[in-house]
Image 1: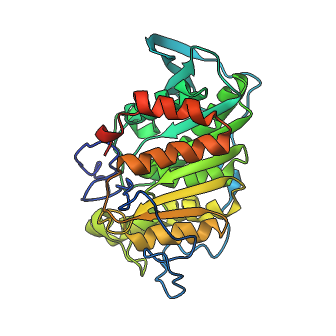
Image 2: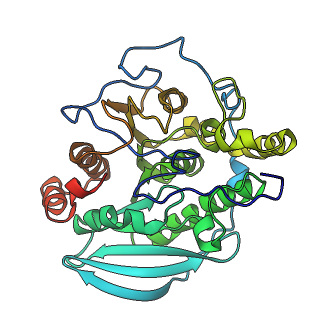
Length: 349
């Protein structure tokens, strides 16, 4: 793969991110659906002060939040493309202007019976799109939240996910500003509390958003690591996976461009309540990389390790709904009914 190489080709699967070759970060579950651990702990739940640190991404300094500044608008115009009714929820396919150009494609769901002042923004894995988050968006809307699931810029561009060029930095910055404008849009609909749910790549980018935008009140981050740099380098900071296959000059230029926007540098600034779910035996997201993200988030973050690899189970998915619902103030009984009726937990890997 030379300097002008196109994207890495990866198979598509629910909740996957750059399957065997690059980003893939979905969650696992323990035997009883309960995990252990906290920030700075090893996958068996014990403190692990000697765990390896990825030299390419060690957060010696905080990130520059101004990289993600955008021009706020008093009101965000919303273009509605279609609308369907799915039992207690109205689901609309919409678009709004991106602060960095073009239009953000999104799915917006609202409860037909009247909502609350709670909003949930959802971000998919890579190389997937917003349809991957449709079911959880509907469950949260059923429980009273206004939900917004957007497409990452690479989806809208149709150019593939990772390019291993400076375009990856441009798209990552655009994604965060798109999400921030999405929060503006949710505020127009009365949102006082914004929760975030991120899967895989969406979990890493959710950690970045939570560190950049103080309006994120809580975030459930399912099987994420510290970002693209952490994922594509080994514990010594040496290019790994697809990044190891390109010329050294290209890899060096990519790392120089991507390090300043790595989520690891920002998550520690977040004032949101954070939940991390990871699998002890995940072969696609190195537990050591996940640990590093947990440690960067700080001791107040909740961490749950599960005795599986890369797949979510019904118990883990249910815990995510319960945790977000509690932090956002959704009615617990109503949320449970919505999860039971609409969650299809046995069908969500």
